[in-house]
Image 1 (cartoon, one colour):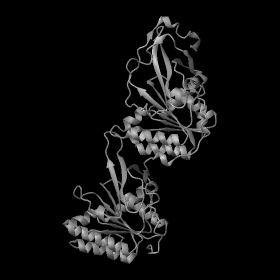
Image 2 (cartoon, rainbow, N blue to C red; image 1 turned 30 degrees about the horizontal axis):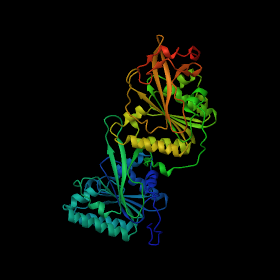
Image 3 (spheres, rainbow, N blue to C red; image 1 turned 135 degrees about the vertical axis):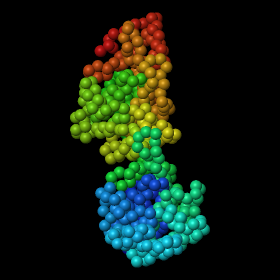
Length: 501
């Protein structure tokens, strides 16, 4: 049934895609004409079908007019998502005679079709069925029939005025076959949603959408990642940290190690993030797990996003160090998500973090590691800005965030793919050094923004009993530079044997 002229002008019409409605702050204005544009395969048809199915759930009549696809093809799309299109009117406007008797749906045959006849056929359908929601797929066919821009524009304007009189909400789909820079449709449509389908050098394709314009409505601008899953389109609205503030306690929490708390000043503070950096094998993941275990033992929830190693490896290694994570997984306090970086977009990752914090109540989030996250999106020039927004969001939510960043090399001059130390509230640096013919490890806190931290460098050990942190190392200089020098005048290393546990 059609919307009446007495409809509330402030009413929003749901599009059937929850993430898009979030971007639009509730949906679109009823009884208007909208343009959905995108290259073939970007998801226009899927979004349009979800729009009609949402109307069906609200008791509204839906009409899908296709000038390029067949009803059978549309039905196949629906089946791939486990949908049924019962109750939605599907009509083809094509010139293939063989479909005249074979198809159960109504069929229009514009013999030697001209644009005027096609438009009249559309008008007759709408007048007969009186739908509230209409999808016209696609405008490229009308553009070809028009043969010149002036005639094309006039016919589209005529359709727009007709639909407005019928109180229809219309989605017109366009596959961007017009000349580059042709914005005629943009000027006619009440709103424009652009879908993009991007190929990457490795891994799955990436999809994103942008609301180019929406008259009279405030919406969330910029690009928003989305995926097409079984069940439809999943849009991941761009994260804006300022929209997600909540009150939280500010007292510091322990890492579970008195010596590490002393290095940090008072431990870790809610609403801050800590960066653990160092070469491979130094103990960054183990330290992060130790801090997370302390939170789990306090009854807090945690989320661990594992990029680099397999989940089974993390579980076995942690159990061997007296940090068994399985009981916390079993009781629901800990969620570990194995991430395939080649399959994940920044928006999807941010959405997963939000779900862990707002949906599962996680107060500790571990990202292991930033290197894999960076390598998954080497062409994204704004990755650092996205990470800044994500960290700001976690800070606004009172979450303790632990980030792991690996460095290239083992000793000497160590480098990283990405320097985000300026984003971090706390930086813990771990280093190898040689003493007495042995490879040893050290830990130091380079900065904290929340307390006056200890400036000393301490020996760091990992044993079957867990992590051990020794006394300050007084006998070496240059440990953090990667080229330590033993200075006899500074005394004996580790006085120091007592810290070798």
